[in-house]
Amino acid sequence: MAIFNRRYMLNRRLAKLFKAVFFLVIVCLVCAGLTHHFHDGPKTVDEYKEFLQGYLGGNANTTVTVVNDADKIKSYYNTVFENLLLFSPKGETARAYGDKCILNEAIGTTSDNIPKFERLSYENLLDCLKLSNEELSALKLSHNFFVQSLDVKYPKGMYQGDGIVMVGGGKYSLMAYLVIKHLRSSGTSLPVEVFIPPNEEDETEFCETALPELNAQCIFIDRILPSAMIKTFHFKGYQFKSLALVSSSFENVLLLDADNYPVRRLDDIFKQEPFKSTGLILWPDFWRRTTTPLFYNISGVAIDLTSPVRYSFDDLTPPEVYFNSTMDRSKIPVNDFAGAMPDVSTESGQLLINKRTHLKTILLSLYYNVNGPAWYYPIIAQRAPGEGDKDTFIAAANFYGLPWYQVKTRVGIDGYSEDGQYHGVGMLQYDFVQDYELYQSARRDITAKYGVAGPSKTGQLRSEIAYDENYSLDTFEEKYFNKEKSGHKVMFIHANFPKFDPLSLWQDKKFINKQGSTYRTYNNLGKFNYWDIELYNFNSFETLFCSGADSVTWFPYMNRALQGNTNDRESMCSYIRMRLDHLEQTHHEATVPKPTH
Image (cartoon, rainbow, N blue to C red; front, side, top):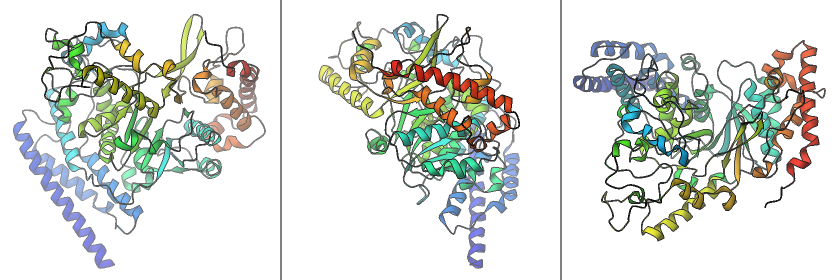
């Protein structure tokens, strides 16, 4: 075994040396064609060679002997993260925008937004986030190096089975617990893993006492990385979701935000179309995409600007119906052209993915998220609401030309009115199986009407299909994806405005009006099977924290805030009981179907 270990380590070092030489050759070839150097990094091939040699030599001690699956996983991801260190761009964008940028508000997909669509044209989006030639060259080179470095062969035994993955830690552990408890009470038996981010407080009681009885367990990044590599990175925020995805043990995964409540049984989701054929299901946000065209330059994805292949979220109607040769192509949103990521933007509070099909997607999205705050989040979002990981998964799948399905039904919303202003509290995302059935029905109808669905395969205009000046997106949506007419069911309530965290709700005195009384914030329970989400959560708060139970110790953030302060705990429980009393009194009225007229 000792001889084997020495030979193995020697082979690993030779492999690293070969990799270094290989990339040095690429550096020489690429740098010969560039007129600019790296920004805030090695500025010559010799400097880059010195950097590579120093890095590889300094990290030789992270080599592990592959003797079991756990070591194979760490060895595989240690290499991935080595390459993340090597090929991540240096510095960060100044987030400077051009004076001509007219991207001053979010742009939706409804008819009242159509006059703003030209703001999303190639040239207009190019006028926004500014990157220097040096930055652009460095980003392009780094992206290419990382992609070339990836070993995308699916490691046997690394992932198995089906399950749900969430990110915990701090208040998110409590929220995840509430979601898992609801999953079990509503009949979902899929195992759940809760990722605890590095450097979080001790979550031992939560992991060892609260979760096991719910067929759930905590997972940590040390499942995939040696401790030396973990200490090299400083992760935060949206990056945790990518880490949770690679750290989880499941092959088929529902990546679910800790404040996102499924409202139907989920055990069959991985056996349904279109997940079976695509391996990636996404859900929509409210807005059209605002990605700078420089992103496609960086990643090397070609966009065909000759003619559009879709109109916003309509990728079924032939382009000849809504586009004619007299129209100004320079005013067409770049997302309507082949090669670009299609509209609408993605809301990543829930995501279904098959790791075997989409390993490349996962690894490249990890790269975008590790480098997200410094570079890729502003590059992909450009001031759009919800900047973060949300569009990194589709960006990676689009780069590799891998299949996905994004739900077409518009995201819903529930909320309340106060002082004449509407306040949304939860996003309603619809059943992807039903949505796909509606999509296939629309495809059949459009095929029957025009004889073909989608863009011409030859790239030539079909003279038999005439331009229709009466075509509209609203009509397309109303006919094929009307939620009320189709009986389309809500699948997830993303309860994020605000989150169900009793500590912050109490501290901020949320949902108490000027008269000192409280009120309901979810007022359309019929949209999700009359499940009373507020009553469920406040009942849970009262049981966990106000009924003499020791559950406070399960959640360190709560324990730290209330420890030794009886008055604060009593005040929080008083708030919880006031809300709970009102929710119980109004439960019957809220859950009785209202007559339709």
